[in-house]
Length: 204
Image 1 (cartoon, helix red, strand yellow):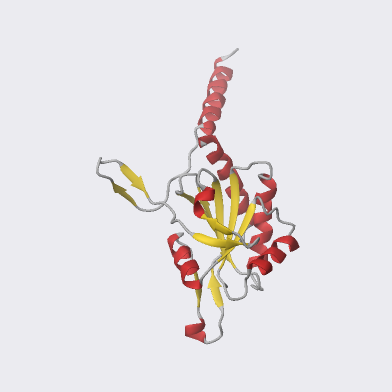
Image 2 (spheres, rainbow, N blue to C red; image 1 turned 180 degrees about the horizontal axis):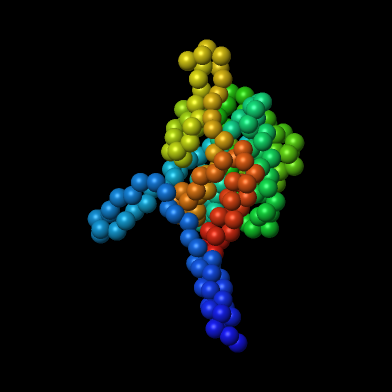
């Protein structure tokens, strides 16, 4: 074996090892605890109602990799596209109980559990994998702020009762730490999300 072949072999092994050790950043503010250890920002606890009219506590997602988005079922523009892209995530991890999807409605007046259930069934969504949530408007909008995404009711501004939100998917690890933000309107970025979930699976 010549010297060039040996060097190429070393490079390939190095690249392979590097890919296994790939890690995602931990996003958000940090602070030091009393012991001087770095503590990362974590997403807040919540208690909302799902599409099966069951009370859901955020603790059910502890130790799970979770993809979170904010939407509303009557949205005529970006929400159907976001849901279609999240279907790719659902299909990629349909056999993995440690990966969950959570879609939180920002239209609490219209999006009752029955409406959310019909929406889920329209898209042939697995209720065990993908949770749709509704709750009081002030609670939901505050939750969106805590996830660092834009979602609000602009009726006070326009008088039209319109809801405004971005198309962000938020990736949260099993310790409730934010590990990535993704453009839910872009297929390529949704595929990046899927790859990043696979990286987190290695951490778990």
